[in-house]
Length: 170
Image 1 (cartoon, rainbow, N blue to C red):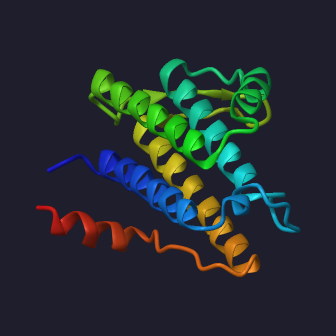
Image 2: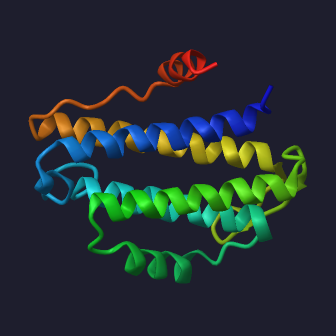
């Protein structure tokens, strides 16, 4: 059986993929359409998730928050990308996470990242993986609300739906 942290991360990848697949079925302009909401567009939500995931992978890898510079570089990298291009970027990032997990092995390893505003945190890799997953879940909920506001349905990305979907494959 797969360690729980890795299963949670697999869920995160699966849920993002479901949203990307759903978005590709909708009119193309929905992804970038300006909307009065938590984010200015669905594409901006994905830029935010991608940026945060990348920063947290960096923190897990080196325990440093080089956040401001990295954030602006990532925003430039993701600016103007289509749904398909953003999906590819997420896929590539998930491969980097998988490589990291393979190298680390022990996700209970203690780490002590120092945040520029929150100081030093005593935690472990598992808790940071759980944070990445929770953060993504929260913002996929924003996407669902935005889609409904635009007159389109969301797609179910609940963890239990993932469990049912992956259980069928066994």
